Image 1 (tube, rainbow, N blue to C red):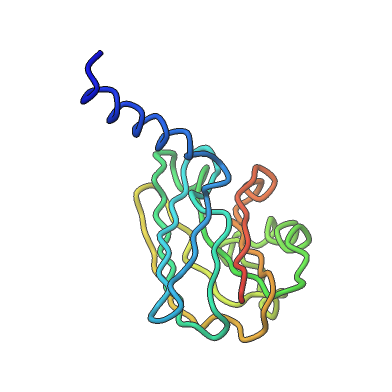
Image 2 (image 1 turned 30 degrees about the vertical axis):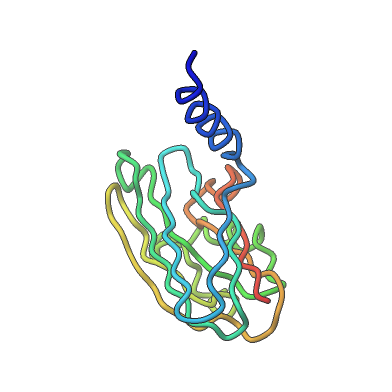
Length: 158
């Protein structure tokens, strides 16, 4: 094989080798608005499971449901919880909160912000100021069984 063909092939192989589950994170620039585009699918996965922001930074999160299943069977949301919240206890309570799109009113004090509950091919966008206290803040999909299937992650505030 000729040299001029080998180098592009090697570069492509190296690029592909770096793609994996650990790469499902994003870090926002230190200034300006930190913008993150989340997708969710019928396999109950977010494309990002860890993001990093600066304390007090303006944050914009968009969520798009890329799936095809009906909303009643496979809806998605993105719920940011306060630091120290028991995410499992929250989603356990959410199962009974269908009337409020699986965000239980009784636990509203544990929620920083959340998107709408989305059906297939729907999107929502929310903006908020990152907490000022550094630490890890969990986010979840509160639709029944999605958290247990892995639809969860963390925002790291630095």
